[in-house]
Length: 331
Figure 1 (cartoon, helix red, strand yellow):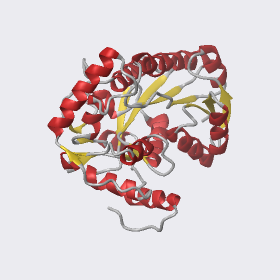
Figure 2 (spheres, rainbow, N blue to C red):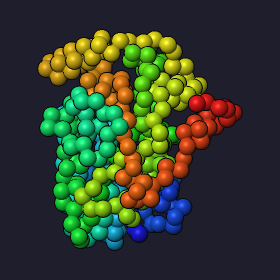
Figure 3 (cartoon, rainbow, N blue to C red):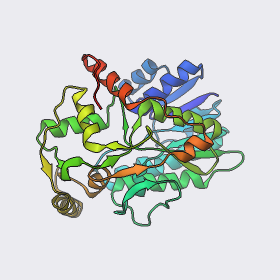
Figure 4 (cartoon, rainbow, N blue to C red):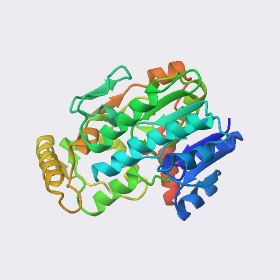
């Protein structure tokens, strides 16, 4: 394998590049800033300057590569619809166009369980659940559109596969953890209805394991959920994850009904009038973090040989060690 990676300077991308280096797999990674170029090099990849806006530049970067891992995306709770669409949908279209032009044989797209968010419960769902007609939120809707495009073009000569990790976490997280820690720091963090519901999670090492297996064994046109195994209580896990980095989640709670009304009003006001900043809570965030979201990874285990080798306990110990604390039992 010779790989090309988009989003190589991000949380998942950096861990993927390191894993590829350990395997002895040459990997080139797209980066659009000096800091991103440095992050790619530090993770063990060959930096390639560019972004998702230029098909020809992407094609040039993919020349000589047989596999593409597409991890770049706008991942946040709120923003302009155009920003989400340009990166998550149009950027993915350009990656597909460039990959086919460069003669790439396989492409693994990093999707998300969020593509299913439409207000329906996501409890024990698997890949047979269809993408919704009316997804809630710009991130879920654009990631769903991107996934559709990726899987629809799969062929014998160009195999495309999607992986859907739920709640990616781990040491070095530059995405989810900073948002949670900032919410605690500013006093915005609340447990919705106490937080005593289940959630699936996927450590970043397990996400990378699934991506590599999908590149080798994934069936074209198929999506695969990835998790850490059995679900865990949301409150227990978030408390342990924050505590591993010295952050106290606190005990403040908010009834789900009140949170739902707040999110509905926020989406309406900010979406209609373009108010500055962002809403205190969005419907998509509430549906993904404020009630049970559990998915099944049986398909990945059966078809790919996925194991999810990194346990939550190991991941939490790594986070605590990164913070400078001694390892201890946390869950």
